[in-house]
Image (cartoon, rainbow over all chains, first blue to last red; front, side):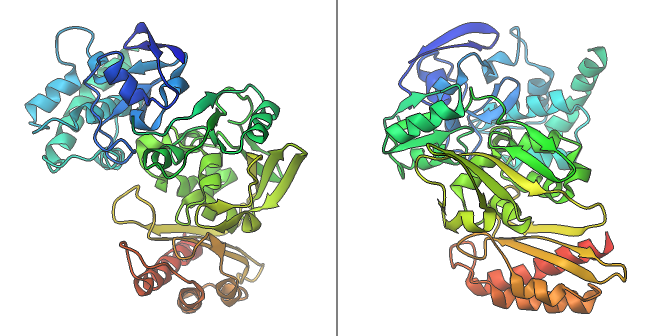
Length: 159
Length: 285
């Protein structure tokens, strides 16, 4: 089936079997391999992308269900060659080790701070319960997200 | 490819969707897919056709009237969380829904999907039973309504016929004076509850509890109310002594499963504690 959508701000198209997940289609058809597939059944959160601004597990949505949608992957968070403030904060706080879960955590945290730039540590911990990380123990991830809030608060005030 | 092969359709009306269901032996409805997609990924189901409700209008509405609260099948958990009317229109629902799964799943998972999937530990089926909800089902011969208590037949098993679609669920209006509590316990935030309780009662003019409703999840093969525990609470002042007695009756009234998450004995003890906490919150909050 043919699917037309927007991916990272640009028009994109899939020609896929109905059973193809969005995660598979992003990786195999568009070669956007920044979206990582961990469990492929909705447990780990590594494949989280934004669909119409909402963070969702791309292994739990069919590509054909994204007709007309706007999808943002980890590749689309930065609009140039520089790290976003959130990404820079992850670097500063050593908020990753192997990095496999990082794309899903970055997309989730970006959506959270865009909607809730003053999110509390408790709220951040609640939201991060949907992303499994086996390296860091989460503490540096939470510190990085807390530290990145300022940039989103500035954006939100400017908007 | 992890999923089995199937065809896909996205009809524009409920009637078209019902006709597609009736025309295929093994068709399944999909909306958020947050329960069905894992089932497909494990190849526990081989539907010939998935019928997506995404183009059908009016299924994502939350309507509040003086007599009832009506929630469309495609309403997502995040829609309930974001609807601030519900903190007064149905505070029990508003308090319970943030316990459903994780943030990303609440952005896509739907009320109708959870009700039709019928996991014995899921919050929404438990709320529907606890609150005497009515489910509206559309089929080839028209629309029928089913009480939540009669809808859930067992684990992942409901009274929904293979050619029917759940369109919405209706909960009776919530009196402002109602006392209520919600409690659940899981090993990790957002995971399925090992046990949970949604409880409420209406105090009479003398402060005595009446109309007690105690709905439980995770401690039977389906969500259910506990009539013996409710009878133990009715007519009492809902003080500490009555609450402890009610919790003890409840623990004896359930038939919990044994699995990797806990023994039946553990679940009974856990349920008693959760009921004590829920009723204490109800009496004091």
